[in-house]
Amino acid sequence: MKPKFRRATREDVPQIVRMLADDFLGAQRERFEDPLPESYFRAFDEIDQDPHNELVVAELDGAVVGTLQLTFTPSLSYQGGRRATVESVRVDAPFRGAGIGKELMRFAIERAKAENCVSV
Image (cartoon, rainbow, N blue to C red; front, side, top):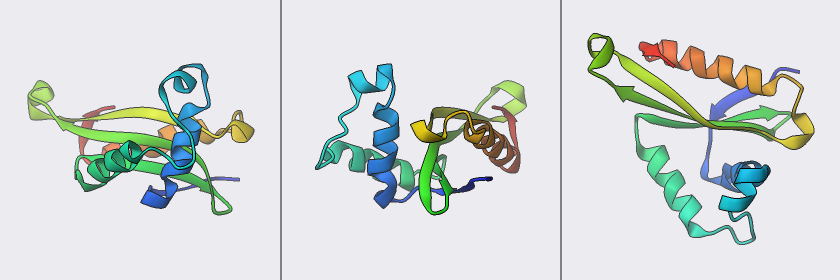
């Protein structure tokens, strides 16, 4: 099954935070609780309103199974070329090893190409 990719919505924030908290480092720095701390929603709003940032989710059968953040940065290097940075890549534990992370990275590379980035 190939996941569908889309921009995250505010409703996706709890699932994203759950995935971010589901590893050794994330468990130490994230607070996945109910209710979710408002700081996550403020950060989402800032990312969502920034035209140089995209928070992306991967879906299978309507369920969020992966995420990443993509940032487009202007640069003087590469003769003023634009760069793409990929971070916070996570795949939901039951779906790890199924190629979703690979598909997320392929998606990020294609988005970077569409934005005329010279590097990822």
